[in-house]
Length: 193
Ligand code: GAR
Image (cartoon, rainbow, N blue to C red; front, side, top):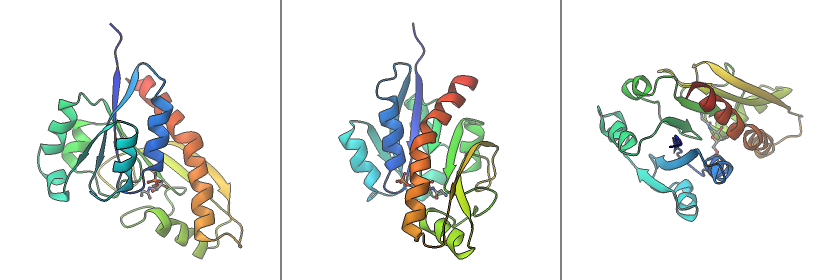
């Protein structure tokens, strides 16, 4: 019998990366995006999940941080890997330990620059613009107990010009994310599975 690798995606907002990853795997037999989870019951990612026929699960911050609750949901769904795609909460120690080296995050900048608590989405792009950076990019990394500090799996850059608005920068970064994130996830999970 063929082994299926089950992936859960955590997202707090729009979920365009979650959708891109799910579509990437829609024709792949041995990897299954099984569940999309969010801490935000108004997140657009939940609409996307519905449209793509993927089960979703919404939790409170309290539940996320409570001993075993989310882990039970993940185990009940036989989840092997977790992908954070625009997920804003710090992953609690117990979850990091239960899925050691099996949680992958994407950050919309070139870590270690512009990372850490409170650095997400347009806040990151605004900081890049304010610092007059000539380039920005994406970092795909493993998750440990600190924000944005786990081992880096992949980075790629894109130029920033002075006329770029925050939304121009966001669009360039999103394009990089769509191009690379699914493939980097796929290479990694096949390597360590
Ligand atoms: C993405 O750009 C992702 O890198 C970023 O949030 C955006 C979510 O977009 N993540 C962070 O800032 C994490 N610190 P999406 O919901 O459309 O995929």
